[in-house]
Length: 152
Image 1: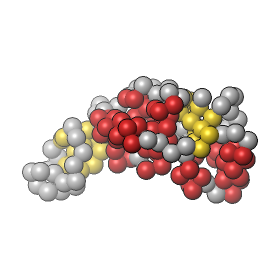
Image 2: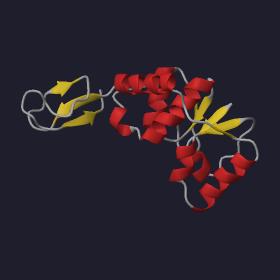
Image 3: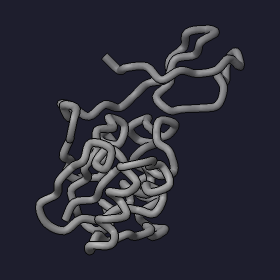
Image 4: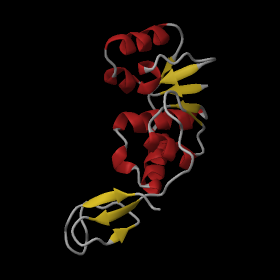
């Protein structure tokens, strides 16, 4: 089973075997990509909304990797369904791939190379330059905004 993100429909991905997606993916698609979603839904693709436990697991994993703010609600739903179904996630989104790795969900990239390593992002204050392991709205020292930073 593969769970398809928007990029699968945009790049005309031709799946081999059973597939699933979430209703919110259809809302992101326009023109021919939207028609592909509709055609696949009409020919047996499972369109499923995730359960609360799976959503919590994804949000927790995204917090652990530092990708929380990089994921849309649609991304979270797609990841949650892939987690629930123990399926392979089909996406080109690096943040989704990173969180999938934290969840133990397999990933298949389409038009881009997949990620080669999982990253746990750090956050740096734009005012005083201090670094933090977790994302916060503001720096607790100077009150400036934080920016996601590659941990290398």
